[in-house]
Length: 256
Ligand SMILES: [Fe+2]
Image 1: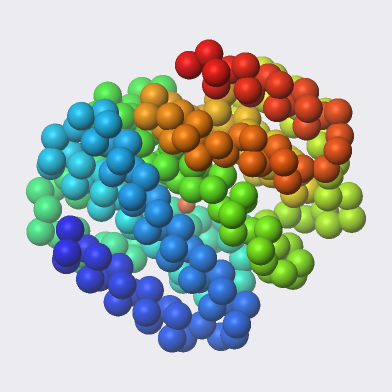
Image 2: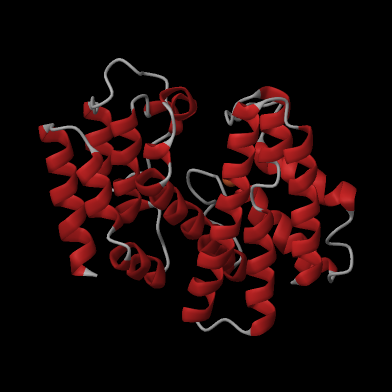
């Protein structure tokens, strides 16, 4: 993995160097640290699932690079919002192709890693994926979401109001949770990013990932071990919606 970490570190250093201001530096740095943690979580899940060493390396490379496109994205557009001109997954694939960092892998491994990166942020995976790709991408997707939950509990609350505002659009009514968000969670559906307007909707959606998005049994163990559902709940405003969601998710996770 040394070669991949060397490239990862050099690429990150370059963007930290050219970042235009403190705001960019903070958010680029946040993404770098996110990728490092996602790598660790993904490798832990892969080991618990008893993947072999080659498979663990593949999942490790994909998880380390899954958000590499976030750096040029934030540098250029000052936002994490994906659009047709700037999908961070596709941008990441372009970076890895241009830098030829995966070219000494077998063509199958390279294709698999690029596919994992392309699919990592899909709301739902296509139903016709080959089994191995489905398994590997599920590990990276779980690790990505677990770290989001971790960040929401441990990192985002420590940011200034301005820096937190990158994550949600409705700042006036922070604790509002729409009916649509509650219903989606109670129906085990993944909530679209466009339906998360307030910080508590973001937190509610994160709790809801447990019943909809997360796929690997060791991922549930990590969420329980880190007490992420309770800690997310504790940060939310005092609304009946959060209680309904919490009760539903808590029963679900304790059944596993
Ligand atoms: Fe991503």
